[in-house]
Length: 73
Image (tube, rainbow, N blue to C red; front, side):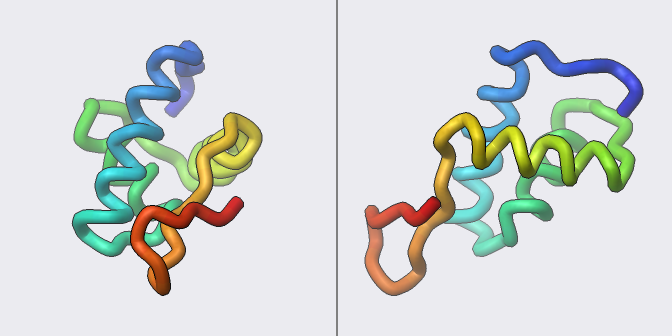
């Protein structure tokens, strides 16, 4: 990616990623990659890992497929 995302940009990407996890049943890492690519970012594999860690630290969970509306961290 090269450029650093602002916190606001990360929140936008993560919000889109959560939607993709729900709608398309993507993994969180794939959803983050897809959201970044949709927003025009050039994505490197190490960027995905750093953003995945930030995603967790910022309090985003991932949907528990067994029970709608229940998020696990």
